[in-house]
Amino acid sequence: MEIDGSVTVRKVWGGLAQLEEIEADCPKGHWEALTLFLYNPKSRQWSQTFINAKMGVISSALIGAFKDAQGELFQQDTFNNRSILVRGVWSNITSNTHNYIESYSDDGGKTWRAAFIAHLTREQE
Image 1 (cartoon, rainbow, N blue to C red):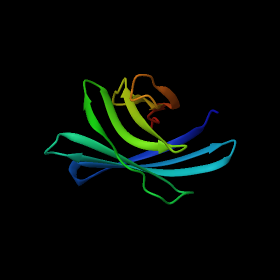
Image 2: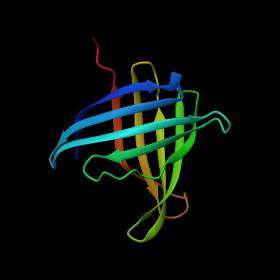
Image 3: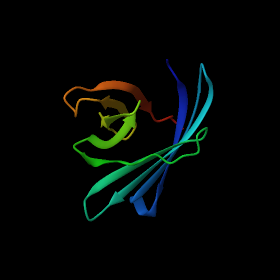
């Protein structure tokens, strides 16, 4: 399914946090969500928490780091009563674009299945 939408990003606390507001229209209707990124200066890691407006529940955070225009964050979760790993990968990060892929593994990270792929481009003013 292809979705066309917008992400509005706002830095918070001098860049130690970032709030993303997501809006999109897809075949199942209008979709709204929030993503909160928090930087932990002691561990030098970021956490990403996602909130879907329809569910109103805060997800467990993905945790990891960004380096050399790429980021990898991980989380343990459950799907269909099975333990899975979730991986979020940001790549080709520039001042105007980046790619994001969220993948799942049910074999301890040996193999990954992409579930969400996004190509984001900053709107020109």
